[in-house]
Image (cartoon, rainbow, N blue to C red; front, side, top):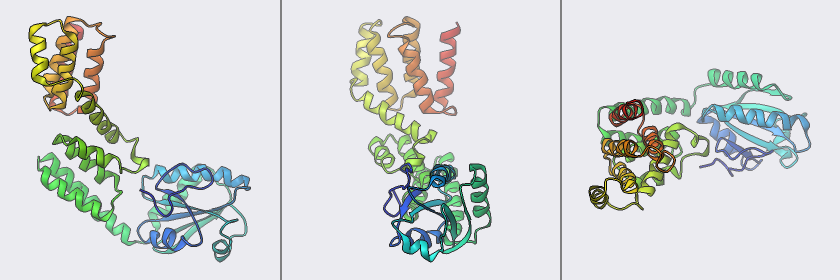
Length: 310
């Protein structure tokens, strides 16, 4: 999910919010895009020392704003025509665009704190755009989806997330919300498909990482055998610790979370040191994925506490 050619300039990190622009792509990447959300343009050159100072700082600020603003970097050596049109006489020169028009700018390598104030000012004072209005509508839609999830109406929530994604296919909140619904329904392939298109800058979020763990745990469960087979092994030999451990993994993958926690705590009681305390570590992994509000997490933590301190 990238804008324009999706390649960051001047050592920029890979990000859908930071791209390299050209004279040919300026209308699309800057003018048109700024009608949806503010766009900052950084005119720079490889030989410019202050540009190398400003570049990473302004990229951090843009990425930290989580999609509220985008950055287009223009190499003036390679794009003299557009630099000339904007009368760029020294570099770095930075312009902010909103509503298809330049609205503010500065020259020189400002400290990162001042860049943050500059961006905050742009976001606060930029003229209303289609994207701003659409952003309000999307925020309301996402709030409604969250309410539907809390009410257990997953079908309505899915419809809302899908509608948002029709308007903004790379919207991280909608993508991860949809993947969360698939997790509740045990639809692992659908989770994997959604995670594969989540923008790179959202892949450090806790909800993304939790869903990655769900996929990993499901893959682990695929290699341990069926619940029925593992239950038979445990019944035949209560000290078959591997079978009990694998049973917990299989139970969790099938949605039997409390039973999975109980199996791991039972293993801890029989042999706490087995495989370097593997049962406790796996239970903590489960609790992290389930989340603190899940009833199974509450029960699992009580069971763990009892096992550790009784």
